Each structure stands twice: as structure tokens, then as C-alpha cells.
Image (cartoon, rainbow, N blue to C red):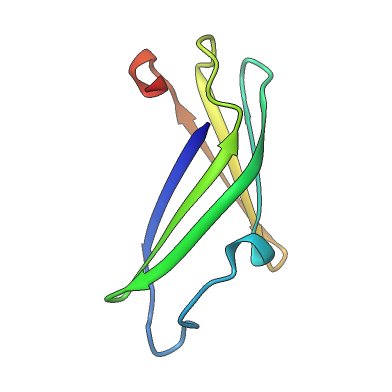
Length: 91
């Protein structure tokens, strides 16, 4: 499996106490070795003005992948992040 941990500041006065990650966000992932990752679970919580998410994808990273690209779409906007990988990232 591949786990993505995300944390970002929020304004507790204007943010719902809980984000509905699976319904509100559309996650996609792929790597340069041709693997496509599917979302298999997620969890989220807010604490002291910070929003935390853990997102689980399947399958895990293959040994020959050198970059991982993830996108998150929310309310018509899409963000993309490409992460360089090294051998120690597959633990």
C-alpha cells in the first residue's frame, strides 16, 4: 500500500469541524513506471487549527518507479504534485 499523510492550517471559525475527504476530494495517482494507484481508504481530523488526513492507495510503489504524481480535485479545482522517489521510500 501507499500512504499519503497531509497536514495544513485551517481557520477553525470558517472550516467545518470535519472534512468529508472521500466525497469532497477526488484523488488520483500514478508513477513513471506505469502504475496507477487507486484510493482504498482515508481518514481526517482537525486539531488546534490544523487539518490532518491519511490517504491510502493500492498497490504499493514498485521498485522501478522514480516519480510519483498525485492529483486532488475539489470543487472544480485540481492540484498536482510530483514527488521524486529514492530506494528508501519503499519501506
